[in-house]
View 1 (cartoon, rainbow, N blue to C red):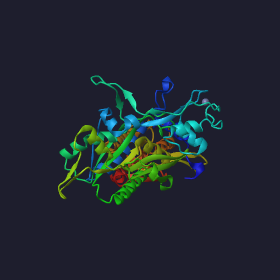
View 2 (tube, rainbow, N blue to C red; view 1 turned 60 degrees about the vertical axis):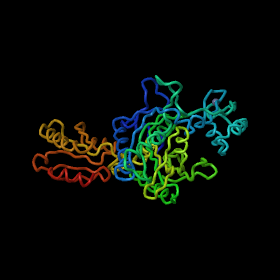
View 3 (cartoon, rainbow, N blue to C red; view 1 turned 90 degrees about the vertical axis):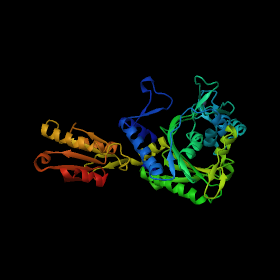
Length: 457
Ligand SMILES: [Zn+2]
């Protein structure tokens, strides 16, 4: 996408609100902390994206099983995973206007240098009078300091704090043993999960790109530590790209970022992020990490449970390594909206806004219209067609306004087909089907409606 055509966050968020995809939450109370709700079309879009992901990575694979774990888990899990002590962000406050910033982001914006994790260095850098507050323009900073990104809460019957999970992966490791014992999975195998996670971000921004309550789609893929993992790793990167394409993302808007060796966690052999070309720059949307046996070993040590795997074929026992493909669901929704958003100049000089979602992604697949709303024969016939199609597809019935306006409304939510019941339906037994992308209309027989949509949806 060229620079000038890139859809800004302002345009996409206003559009998503106006058309019932995504609303700022708690709006009647003035909004709340960059939190959002998915509206009627947004929830369909979200469910479709989850469904495409689940079918691709769970249902259609014999080596991956699914699960759904709790949000509040035994806090010992977060001690073992290192989150309790190490899941921090660096923050700094402007003493003048009291605004809070991510210290590493701020320093990087102003100096170009990546000082992540180096508090003293950031504090020192901020003493330079050139380091001005983006909010008030003054230069008067507190020291940079760490703050935990975990949401803390309490639970009846439990002593001490518990946490809202900061990632979904932990719940998978908690059930690793149960899954091996209860199913016939054999290494290599994966466990997939879709669910909410919570991070107490210092600054939430860019619409649903950075929010504190979000959803992840994650897989832990367990492998034999002795195999050559590199082809598998590359294969996973390929699968991730296939998924992005399935939800409508173009190759030119994607790039990989491999974490430099010196910045990798000590246990990781390789980590690659997928980035999308947003209007604000390249932003991380997904990742793939080789995590070694760090997680299982840590949980084994902290729990005194053996988390080994017995390979009966080769008669050997080992703690598997994991490859971890992870996708931010909200970011998937965001990039599918941005990729679909199209403004087209029409021959009559007007502009049409159309969401060119892939068919599987579109919240509504077919809209059914009676040509006129005050002709009982037409309305009844259209309702009959709607009743039949809505058993199989997400459909919408619309008899409001002229047909041209109804087409435009459906274009704006990305409905691939509009079907109009007109006078020919009553006289000749035909209906008109209109294609979202070509805007071409096709006359088909009523008895061929099912066949048409089986072929086209
Ligand atoms: Zn300030």
